[in-house]
Image (cartoon, rainbow, N blue to C red):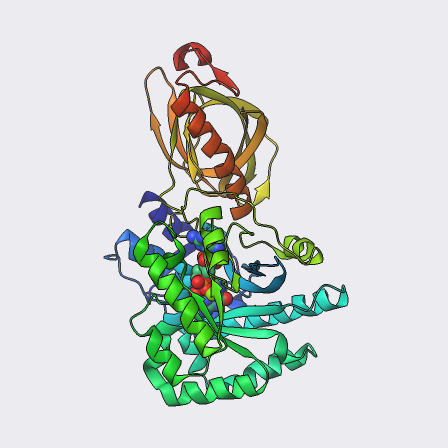
Length: 459
Ligand code: C2E
Ligand code: MG
């Protein structure tokens, strides 16, 4: 909460009329933002969670102008042949204070504020721009699936607007798959149906996202013509061992075959799930076993290979998306020596030397270290830690979220990482191995461990 209060003071100052003034942007931009930004008032009674949402909502208004949105791509693969059939575009928000913000944290805010319309258009333009680049590079003409919220479908002339954007890039609309999530669908079935028909007449395919997760998945199949069903990842979890989920998966595969609808299984993470789905002749799938969502350059390298091979990166069954804040922590049997560097202060790169610290515990989300130096808990100070674990040299970045003085003039700090998902997956892979080794051998010490007490080390 202290951090939030500080940010309130530094980022926004309260004017006499109760408006929040945002610094760091020009007056012209400021007034444009204020014109379209209804979230200018706030109450001091807001609790920290809603206050965080309040800040995020405000920042979301100019996230596109400030070039903070990114699109990642995840391959959708023919399970039998390994051929890449499509990629799904997944938006990310690189927030200057909060770091990487996943869509589950901000899409609902974008829906509430109506900003999803602008974000959706930006995502589609980005996808069209990249798709054109892929064609120009001679990459295979796969399809691209883009997620849309219900609010976007409520726009008049929705299909025309999509077509206009695609035309800007001189692309054939047939490359596009529009994914709709069922929770939005039943609000205005007539309007929605006519949009879906218009889109389909352009050659755009419609996919029903997260199939089975809501209450009325089957009803939609009656109301709308869909081309693809994406079976929600929650049903893939624990197959073939969970008999209920296995029965559901088998039934949906059977159903889609009868209805001549293509099916994509979401969230495939391990060999058991994959071989089970293959055995059931499931057509296509996506998941970390093939690739996590990756940036433009990495997806281009994957597309150039035309096929995507399954490889296990994280077989814990944990979802990076769902469990980002609930990561496990490994309590290390000995202190791990690391070199700490201050990389950035308020967005400016600095070079103010290095110091050694001792890491006490570490997880994919952050670490805890001891130092004899006092550092402030500020998210605008980005630190880098370099250390050895197993045979590997690891570098992680993050900022201090808590500090406290422990005995002998030493300080203990909690750090939250600002690493991207790919780096996190790499880190999880190493930490999983460390965890197994520690379980097997209490005296595990493969890395830059020191056996001194904290006091003796810093003395
Ligand atoms: P979704 O459409 O169901 O997308 C699949 C989600 O599962 C993605 O989460 C993806 O990163 C994650 N995922 C992929 N493979 C695996 C796996 O093997 N295991 C697990 N546990 N998860 C996996 P992400 O990227 O965080 O997106 C969350 C949701 O946000 C999406 O769910 C979609 O509904 C929404 N979303 C994403 N991008 C956009 C967008 O541009 N516009 C709109 N309106 N919604 C979006
Ligand atoms: Mg989707």
